[in-house]
Image 1 (cartoon, one colour):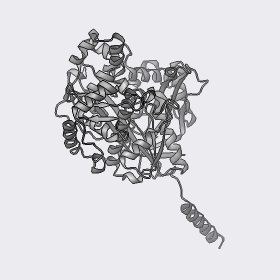
Image 2 (cartoon, rainbow, N blue to C red):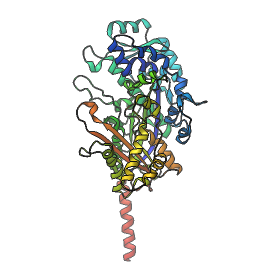
Image 3 (cartoon, rainbow, N blue to C red):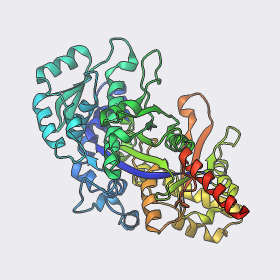
Amino acid sequence: MSSVGIKGYAYCLNHVPELGLHYGNTPYVERHHHKGESEYLKNLPEHMQSFEDARDYAPNQAYIGGFPLSEYEAKKQPWYENRLTGSSRYGKFGEIMPEDEFLGLMDICDVFDIIWLEKGFAASVKEKLAQDPIINDHVLARLEAGHDLSEIETEVKDHLALPLYFDNKVVGCARNGHEVDECLFAYVLLENLACKAGGVLALLHMLENTGVAPEEIDFVIECSEEAAGDMNQRGGGNFAKSVAEIAGCVNASGCDVRGFCAGPVNAMLAAASQVASGLRKNCVVLAGGAIPKLYMNSRDHVKKGMPALEDCLGNFAIMLVPDDGTNPVIRLDAVGKHSVGSGASPQAVTSALVFEPLQKIGLTFTDVDKFAAELHTPEITLPAGAGDVPLASTKMIAALAVMKKVIEKADMMNFVKEKGLVGYAHTQGHIPSGVPFVGPACEAIKEGSMNRVMIIGKGSLFLARLTNLADGASFLIEPSSGGAGAVVSKEDVKALILEVLSEITEKLQ
């Protein structure tokens, strides 16, 4: 059986309500469409959460590993009316970074002088970032001293720079990268730098969590939904290497994998294949967040008098290594694939991604402890009419299990409760699709409380106006069988041959 070990993982959030207010796609388009403040935009600031609100919101703590998912599922709902107490910005997997520090991190990640921060604000942020245990001196030294506020105001007024806010005050700006190239205008570059900075934060936490030195990283695959390039190649850029550069991974190379919501699972499989073949000694799969997705459903949140919950960028990083018998593994002999001819109905997608890979290796639905598909926080999606997405996904799996006569219809909801998950990920597009559960699944497998988990990524390709096809991929995580899938060196092969020859010689004598 071919398998690859999962050595480590990190999950981080960046609480950025003012980036969302000004540059999240829903309020941004509303502001430009109405050429002023609509009723929704006037009311949105009153529904924005403080950092403490976001820190104490149960789904956010679940995402960063602030407490076990079993406790999360038992928490009283609605979660925004039943905040946690005594929460830390740091969890087992990562952190929730405040907006001022994240603006500083974007400046750190900027190598083309796009981000300008006001001098006093930059100095304040530097002191705060210095207290973050994963922001080392190498990274912190990249933070610029800053500019006078008058310089920033001139950039905004005369050169189309976008103002950056904190505490309702202008504290910096994002500048244009070109006079006529729309792909290099400030809005796009701000979006890309935020994605890059989130990826850097997750990678730094992953390195800390694993004890791996940056120099040891061999290859990085980035799988967000952003596109870096210019007018001649709008999506041709490389987030992966740009993230690795800031984190000090001097021996790494990298590339980007795109697939909308199915991107992370496809990236995991691409990385696992390279490690299993021996091409890479390790691979890190990571992604930063998407500014346009901030406050995507906030119109409905405001209308219903609840907090505007989509105020965080979501990031993750996962490290894959050869199976040496010590880490949970991805099985590469049971990978789900949604082919062109599979069909786009929920039943067809579920069959391709769940039933068929299990059937291939002689397993069935009940042999899996948990199915992790789309893990959107239901309090975000329900008010907007999108339903409880994780619940709907698990119900479809249960319905297929009934059709295949694996379980009885009367047992469907027991199956859903036992095998499903309560959503806890932000609506960051690619982030919710399966990958948030890789870390908790590995922890449970190492503890012995789970034996087999399926990670599922699903996507809608019509978003690019190229095809109406659905997309998806899946894989299983299990305990290692003892390194059977490990990459064997030439020296090991030679030693094994000599050992066999010695045994044969002894028997002949």
